[in-house]
Image (cartoon, rainbow, N blue to C red; front, side, top):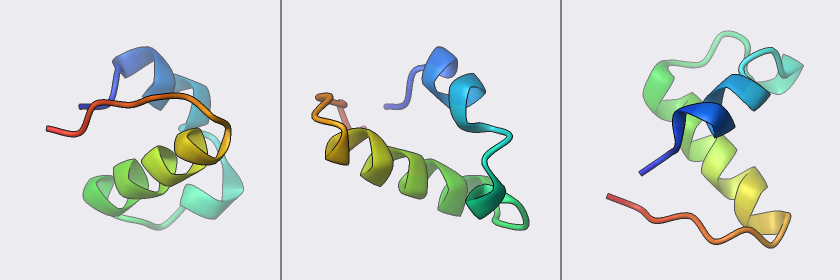
Length: 42
């Protein structure tokens, strides 16, 4: 599950513009995993 603060941190990212909410969340999860943060997936 994506924490709302993580979503807010990324919501203005240019690469997320034009994506559906599901696609954007998947992309954010990928970016956060690359940054070494552990995210729980629902």
